[in-house]
Length: 279
Ligand SMILES: [Zn+2]
Image 1 (tube, rainbow, N blue to C red):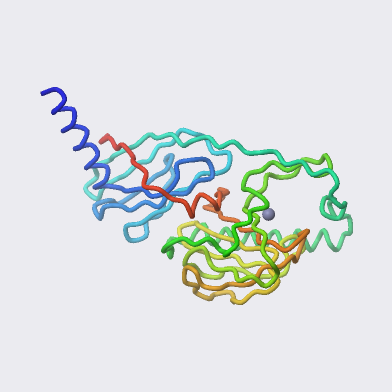
Image 2 (cartoon, protein in one colour):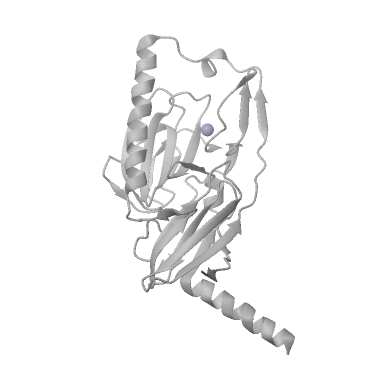
């Protein structure tokens, strides 16, 4: 009888969680999750901060160094509130030391004109990203790896020490491929910014809505324009080695709001179970 009761309670809990929210993604540092919400849900909060809902979908993401304990709050249209406290997994990042790298790839520029150029490019990129964070629409469909090649030469999160100098952790995935290889959009989105910048070289920044962005840098050519609506898997450009790059490769970066997302996590999503408790 006790066992029967346990099973009954377990399944009724599970049923209410699935009824209100289902999650597909990875509860890990650098992970991203797609939430499908019941139509009775009015508001969603992650750690007490509102998460925009587009129809019945929403996105949540976790930074490279995100804290492990989180709280998801759901408020229904009838005012009922449900919460789920959950933990994400810690990710260990490797340290990459390269000692014989040519100075041109390491040193900070000293030329005043170049410094001004770099700073104006950085602020343009930041402005576009801030607009993406505010876009409440959501365009995502299925997710794609942007290249046919899977020859990964740089992982997300790696702490790089170049010629003894500590650099910022690597915030994307580097994939080697010959110049001219086709690059496709990781999912549906709108082209927010393109350019030919000192560090990025030729690049494309996509807005997938609800704060989700992706960037493709060091391209040899760009085949889209700002404002274009690109379907998941649509061509956006070709692999190259423009900007500060030491060989033909794609640097693929993903962000959710100000958080750095591991691109490898999003082509590898699983159903995640959340236990939800009525407040
Ligand atoms: Zn890179």
